[in-house]
Image (cartoon, rainbow, N blue to C red):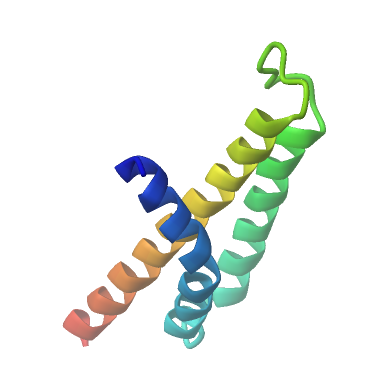
Length: 97
């Protein structure tokens, strides 16, 4: 199996756990709900971009697999970046206190 595919599948499967850990790490932050709603809006924007517009077309894609994997990649990257932010923010808070 290709290493990039393995990493992508691992992160895809780990995304729910990373998301839950991110929520736990950021839950006591006073701007948590603003951050949560902003990220929810970004995620909805990604999905609308992939599935609801003509902006991203991949030529002949009979079964829509490029579109589906692109959406999965966008969601996975979003979760991984959010997890990185949560860990960094928690470390910053711990160091600042």
